[in-house]
Image (cartoon, rainbow over all chains, first blue to last red; front, side, top):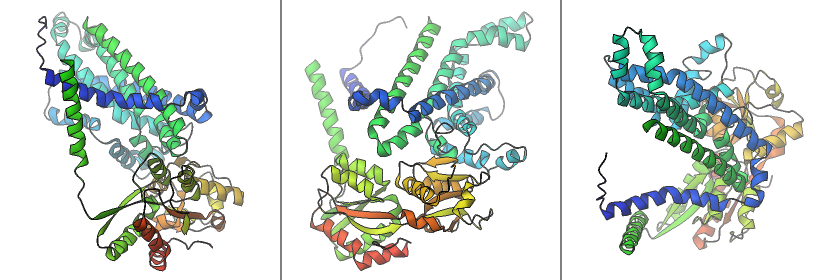
Length: 263
Length: 251
């Protein structure tokens, strides 16, 4: 922690540089391809604005759902012990490594019209096929593990000292949670939420497979980019840059929160 | 130090690039054919015939959406033959001066209504799709099948309010075969390729939006490419295409 040993071998740095270039050069390539003369017009067309607005709305909704369900899940995984916990953790984190299109197919056979729960949902008058709700479901499915994973890590790092003290002073579990645990990992929750938001914003495969694509209803920014690419590559590039900019902003916010929490 | 570093970086890049480049097997000759996704089954068949006639040649087929393929070719992909699902996409490649032969129409395809097997909703015409209780999926107007769907709506005067506008005809078919949607407008050949999962309901206005498939030799193609185009447009190729549901050109 306090030492300043920097004896990293040069060859290691060289490989690191190659890796960094591999990640950064493609982003530069997008910027170089932007048709700046038409940029404003391209990103402010009706379909572009509808897609950006829908993306922001659905990602925000998914993030709220991620926090509502992810925080209890992270506590259950970090603060309790039960049989099969390790298997459960692996299953819950599976969407992190699952190809999104597989997630879309899984959602289709769960919430789809002929899916496991689809029939019952239809009986009570809920049909989420091709609705904005389907987009939110797809985004939450892929983003929830990000919040669980980052908050569980924060909880383990924070330890249980303060919680134990509060409990020995007679605080009930709910009071401990509200007054001690949640404030302690507050920055962890926020940075987990930011990560979830970013993941939801970029969701493509599950949405395309499960929700469909209709302007203003289910066609989020990544789907709009994919469609524009067919006929108007310039518009696709311009919109990609918008998405990159939003992603950079999100990463910057998450980084600041992280820095703030470690000081 | 920085010089040694940059030498090392350069070395690593060169090494990794050559490692990637040397993996393709060396046959006598390879013919790169880029064809619209809907042509997959008949073109695999035709390529087999071609290889039987030219034992020294291996036909490398690349199937994707026509617009995608055009973008790849314009970006310098080594296509020698390009078969597109519509004239407009071929025109994009021609406009870049990348064609070595005049495009020839070699097949046609018409739209049909795809419904679930045994047609549970009794959909029998384009009018059925304007019923708000029937959820219909179309292609987006930006892709060839969507342009055709717009044309039949315009001609028949029947507006369809789709629940989704997909980027490819296979996505439309997927929404119908999975039961998410009740109906979709797809090509006759797609229903045939889907087997028993979906059924086709023909409609009158379909004849107003016949999609013509053009094929051409691209800039990097030579005699072999021309021979492939000739095979596709000659009776043996035409028979294979018609077996998969494609229509004859110039109708």
